[in-house]
Length: 341
Image (cartoon, rainbow, N blue to C red; front, side, top):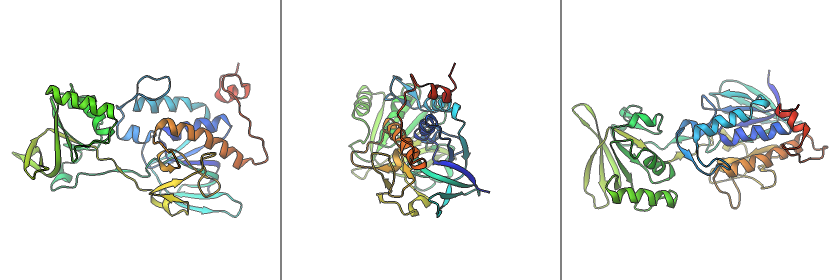
């Protein structure tokens, strides 16, 4: 039997969690499907200790802390999570509803679908050089699971984006040494992070290297580090206890890409009124969508989720007038939040 519901959210990252809250305020309950084992998306899976500085009213917030706060916020709305599975099939019903099926055989009969899957069933771009695979999970990593475990160790951090430089700055002073390796002189990270990194290089407490990884080497049968070739073609043997690779994620929409929606470079086109896709009843928020002026910020995803919730309400109840109520003063919202006297 299919689970009958008003909305299924695909993805369980921060934007999805806030989407649950906005739907709950409108008295709409959600079922959530995600390929990971726990809610939180990239924040929990890839960088739980990463500090975030642009969440309103929170000067600094750890990524996992943000997820934990969002989960606390949505408790009044009792969302149903279906973790460790992906949506493999979507069918259009004659009544305008959708039939979804997951990799575990869970079936949904839903009025609407919200795509909040980030970059899809994402996979980190891996270090594909000789012998690297044998050391993955031991000395070569694609996320920092325990920042405290690097104390006193020599680290190699690969990448030139925000994740790479964020972790360079976060782990500096904890690790014995850090060498940052990027294939180009230019960095994609926030300029302020680049300035901080360059100041550490100038002080002699951080090594910066530009080049390409060629191989893993061993020392007495143990992991030794990486062989790196610089722009002049000279090979350098860089010793390290641990290597962290932050080359970004390979976006993979999977079956979603075959649903017939308008796409632009593996992202789903949406309007900016309801964040609805080209298929009526399917909405998309967060990194998975695109529109003119799109900025890939958690803050932007929260805004998109708020407007998408009203779009879902209008789709489910087209005969009802959409009313904007405020959590400060509305007795109805207080009741839904469980704070009514």
